[in-house]
Image 1: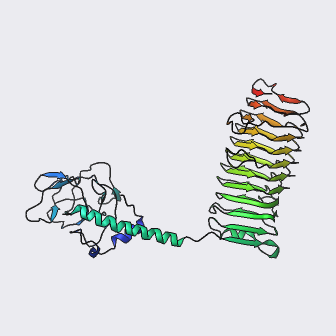
Image 2: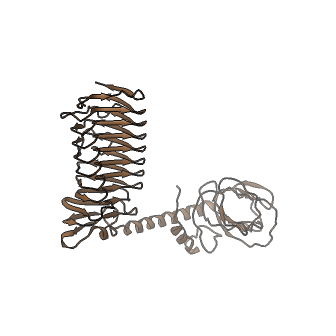
Image 3: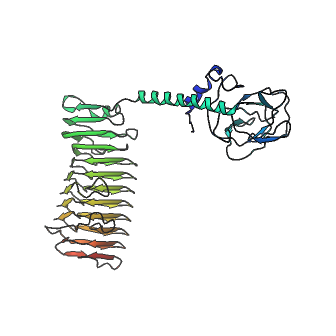
Length: 448
């Protein structure tokens, strides 16, 4: 069994008195911490050597130093007649400072100090050293057993203290109608906490990168009304943040997930943002289900900068979508660009001023079982070395085609500038036809 101690626990071990270790004769006046194996050099005084497995237990008298001699500490010398209960070895100038009482086989790892240099640990190769006298235990296996037992006890004590220090997750409530505010409360949340939001909160909310695994829940009644149009109404920089049940109004973006953040966005309404209702950018990832994203001045949803989104499903393999509605936005319904990816399953994307979905600038989307109705230009536009797999033709986990019941203003789908389309078109349609692949750089693998 291997016992690993944290620096704090190791320090505690080093302070235990020698009285706790009667089975390990020759221990120095304090027990150093446990660790792994040794490969450093040590020869016996008599020149005879055999395999040694055991524990370095302390420093001896530095007298009798023989400089310039290399020793192999993986080899055990024969017993001296004048010292039957221990092995004393003249070791020289490096000033070995044993920190380990025991070790896993074949021997302990030793931390040693070179004069004028920082501490170093060597576990992989033999290093010629001249060292101080080191005293070895006559009963190394007993020393190993005792120290391991003590180490296990201390580890369990440490685990108990750690568990005791954990505080159970809590639920807090902010009522903005009675003077409460979300922002100041966020700083006090711990991982696992839930913050219930009531009333109308007139603030721009920033969830900092140090805030993780918390839930912001409006319960279908809370509202965030952003007073500053230059900042997102809710900006997420933390990880594993859940935002649910809120009406988010105004702000530069309704909800913005940035700088490597991860979030679940569920059951919200995002409306009247200066730019987009939802932004996911800068290597961030979001799961977006059961939301209404509408009447934003630019796009409904913007995914950019090597970001990724599951839109309408929580997991890649979900067979039952949780639809979002993206409608009546001033630009596109959804834009995926700048090397980003999206899995867009089972949503309604309608009435947006430009395209229902644009995928561009070396980006990709799986698009299945969505409704594209009445968008001002094309239902789907794919451009600039990007690709769209229709009806999940790549993953083949959700092989349902997209549909149109109210024609889009242009084509059902248009492909240009080195893009590709693949998979079943379904009933995708527009006033100008089902698809436009007139740009000869488009790779058309779409089927009826």
